[in-house]
Amino acid sequence: MEDLYDVMIIGGGAAGLTAGIYSSRAKLSTIILNDGAVGGQMVLTDEIANYPGVEKTKGFMLANTMKMQAKSFGCKIRTNVNIVKYNLEGEVKSVELKDGRSFKAKAVVLAPGGKPRSLNIPGEDKFKGTGISYCATCDGDFFTGKDLIVVGGGNSALEEAVALTNFARKVTIVHQFDHFQAFEHAVQEAKNNPKIDFIMESELRSFEGNEVLEKVTIEHLPTGKISEMKIDGVFIFVGYQPNTEVFKGIVNLNERGEIPVDADMKTNIPGVFAAGDCIAKKYRQVTTAVAEGTVAALSAAEYIRG
Image (tube, rainbow, N blue to C red; front, side):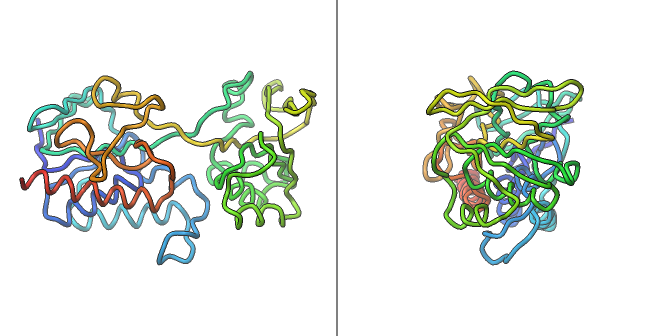
């Protein structure tokens, strides 16, 4: 069976859900295909306090609201799908799923989002899930009363470090520079928290332990001195990499694996648009993803209607 839609959206994060809202509200038959549960990076965020018009909310709650909005306008959402083939050239685009199903559409919005970057140091793969995490919302409760390290110096690292103090006995932020890349309010909130300490100009060099993580080695970059630190858990927030590996050779990607788009979110293929953390851009926020999803959907509608 092949289903033909006006717009097919790949990815169900902030950008994909917003594109689904705008596209379906424009009376275009729309489907969102997502490889897991919808929500993207929003569901990994404990608290969102900078979304305009919403004073404060949980990430999963905002994601669920967007999902319900899209469905209320007629957007269909398919989760846990495994796409094995993309055919994006021509007037009708299509994808093929591992289970044999296929979907067709006149326009496609690519919004696969991104995933947390790894440190790629010894022991990281071994202790993922047994001491190493990339999601404070998911795993913070497992470390109640424990000592933690947070790696990173951007907004996510500092905000999630503060969130982890709701569970942990102590949180130590390890950052490679002598300053942070986060907004000043996030920096001050972390510095004012009595449970948070800082190790600056330093990088983790290895994770060590038996069945679970027990300690890390840390290099002080200016001196090269290596030290050990006993720790119960490490949370890594050093940015994201786009989920675009499957699009190599299908759409243009830059050297960082991002999809270049113009102001209308157009890719190099007519009728194929992209939005969210997968595109080449400087800032990655829920608000920017929402804006890009909006533009992508409106551009797709314009493309379909000629």
